[in-house]
Amino acid sequence: MFYFLKSLGVGSIVQSFLKRPRRCLQLPFLYKSCNFLNFKLNIMVQVKTVERPNPQDRVAANKFYAQAIATGSTDLERLAYLVSHQSTVREADCYAVLISLMHNVIDELEQGRIVKLDKLGSFQIGVRSEGALTPEGVTINLVKKSHINFRPDSPLRDMLQKVKFTHSSS
Image (cartoon, rainbow, N blue to C red; front, side):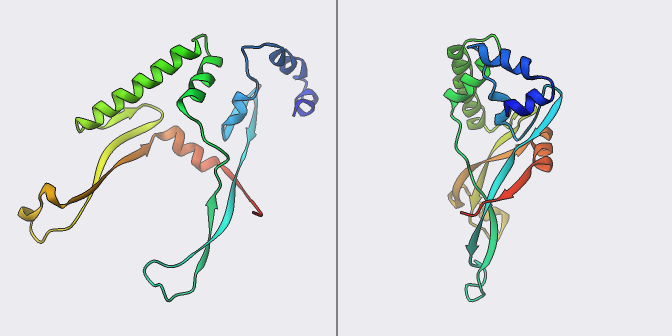
């Protein structure tokens, strides 16, 4: 990757980033698509082939579908590390803010509110329930399960339109 950047005439800039201990050059490359030094990098999301039966017709032949492969996961500690290395805020402070955000999101959801994090998306509690024959027959006893609905905001939706895929042989 360094030689590619060097061929673009930005090798010395990248080399200076590599020498700085508080800067992490790999951070911009974690995203699906990003601008770094005025050029765009696209990272492919891998998909694999999986065979699945038709849940509505178990007698029908199975079909094959593409399924995204996760390359890992990121927790709050990692997010705090990433944010701290992209700003002047210490890692512990970033972690404390993220934990506080999580607690406040939970509190707001428990109060029945939609939690909108601008440029990220909205969280809302949803329920699954059994059906009733009349409106009067709907009671809280029919609720089977609760879950969280997430509606991505435009930057995440835009990213989904631009993401590229590659097929994995495994």
